[in-house]
Length: 141
Image 1 (cartoon, rainbow, N blue to C red):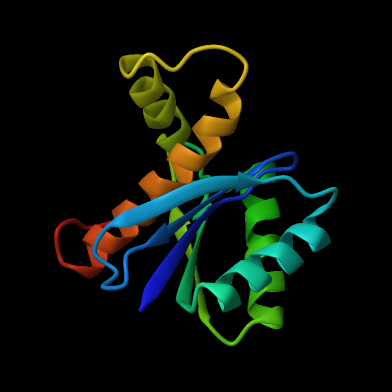
Image 2 (cartoon, rainbow, N blue to C red):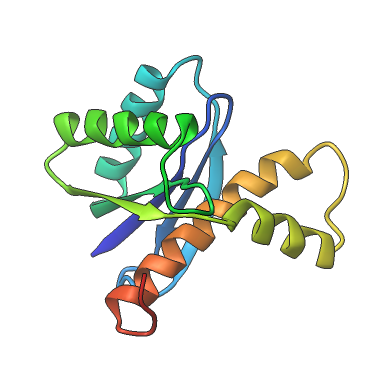
């Protein structure tokens, strides 16, 4: 049973896929599609090819817990995924994942132009791992 984590963005979308036991976030990469409909198509295709049983979409909330414009886009994106696939689609609080991803990349010496692409993939991994840990009882939302 694989679970997919998504860091949805207008230009780049980070994707991470768990191991077969859904314990660890594994492979991570970005996809770049011209619009959200094409991004949904690509995610559905990847989920089918990788036999994903659940999709976790990061929900960027404001620090006070409210949902802003970016968060609303993620809600709509998740709803489109639900309409197109039979797997469970979950929205997951992703506050500070991009900050954490940038910190990790800085600490590992990843600087420069390609950093933006790596940031989205790392953020997707952080979203996914947080969700996997929650499901395993290791932390709470």
